[in-house]
Each structure stands twice: as C-alpha cells, then as structure tokens.
Image (cartoon, rainbow, N blue to C red; front, side, top):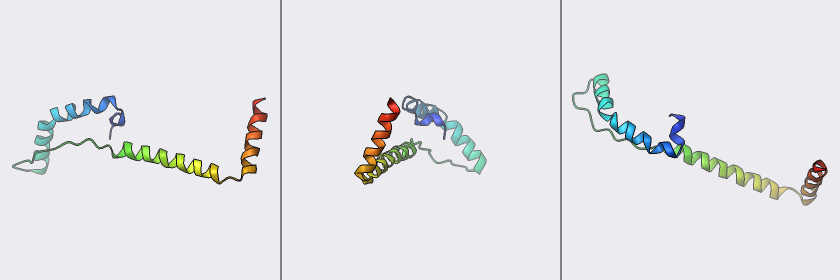
Length: 88
C-alpha cells in the first residue's frame, strides 16, 4: 500500500485514478490468468490500517493513564519535585 493512501486529501484522488485504470487492470488480469471472460472489478478503500493506528494510540493513552493512576501518591509527588528542581 502506498504511504500516501492514509492522507486525507489523497483519498479522493486514488479512487478516480484506479477507476480510470480499471479497463487496463481487467485486460492484464484476463491475459495473465488466461480468462475468456473477466469478472467486474470493484475497488474499495481499505481504512483498516488507519483505524488500527488510531486504536493503538488510544490504547497507549489508556495504558499510560492507568500506569499513572497506579503509582503510589508519594512516587507521583517525588516525580513532580524532580521536575520542579530541573526547571530552576
């Protein structure tokens, strides 16, 4: 899959480009597989990768928030004191 397929602006360009090449793709498919009648081809945008990446980010956020909530309070205070000392 081309990396540009995940970009929002290019999602409108790809279907038009692929659909314009449908005849060529069908001919090549028929020639390669030696089909007398080639079935119609339907192109569908696969958004599962983008969905998976978004879900992965959400899971990472939840895990980080859960780990932060699991820390004992004195550990959280110590972390904040170290940060404040580093800012000076």
